[in-house]
Amino acid sequence: MADDRFTTHAELFDLRGKYALVTGGTRGIGMMIARGLLRAGARVVISSRDADACTEAERQLSEFGEVRAIPADLSRYEECRRLADLVTADSGRLDILVNNAGAMWREPLETFPVEAWDSVVDLNLKSPFWLVQALLPALRAAGTADDPARVINIGSIAAIHVAASPNYSYAGSKAGLHQLTRVLARELGPQHVTVNAVAPGPFPSRMMASTLETHGDAIAAKAPLRRVGREDDMAGVAVFLASRAGSYLTGAVVPVDGGIATTATGT
Image (cartoon, rainbow, N blue to C red; front, side):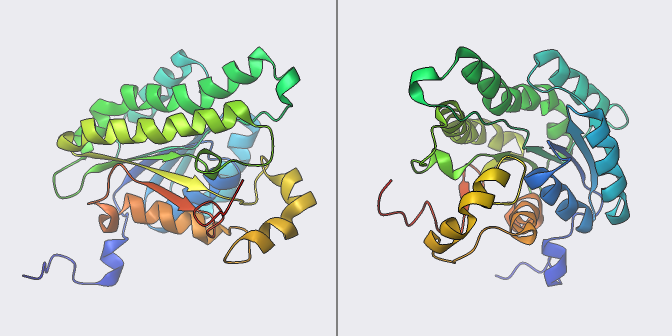
């Protein structure tokens, strides 16, 4: 029997009335996602360690909807708790959490330092867990059986295939985040919270800037779709996962990479 609750196509992707937090939302993939959520009607908080970047990103994004920027160093547990308290102070609810803040460290195996593990794992793997932990009451308050609250973790195709660059802690931390996504999805599903991950391929960002400048054409040529990612590619998958259209999906890792990792024939 057809479900007549969705009378128009637009309602499937409508985020009006939703409240979202996007970490690392001042640039790159985080800003792409924040802009997409705003355009779909959500009210959005973005965060970054850089206070000036927060101010500028808030200015840029404000033309698309209601946005607030909060500086926070999410590699530190106490900062995750502080951000969670600030985000939920007005209503005690959060519909969408996007764990995007991340770091990468490229260095050869022989000289790869201790701090390259600690700083990367703290931000890429520990902070998403800490934020889910801190924001779980607010996510539970927002979610229902028909329309769960959403956690969207930003992983990487570096956790699906072996990249050419020596990014040991980055690849390891993102692989851990993919599995953490599945573990949390199983636990939080009965609590009306879905947990999914997006595994981006090459997108224009500060993290990828030097790589794309040097090897962008070659990377695009190896992708089955023959290009690198665009803003609407990332915004689209985030809106899908955050909207009613994605309400029956949890525990998934969605590669958004033009087929680079999922069709690779070797490393």
